[in-house]
View 1: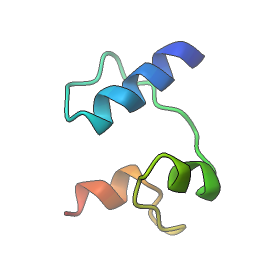
View 2: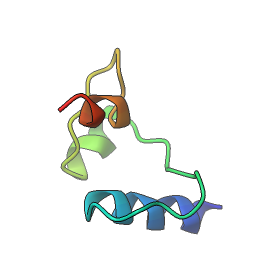
View 3: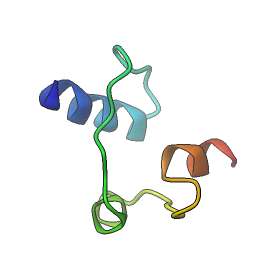
Length: 51
């Protein structure tokens, strides 16, 4: 599950379809290290979807 979640994060960052529905749980610092937009009230996925 851990590997699938991280593989899906990479696919998300490359704008490719996810395989399954798993994504990693990221702290604020981890999201920033991954280059993801993050707001505590929305998380990173919801924030990206609002573009």
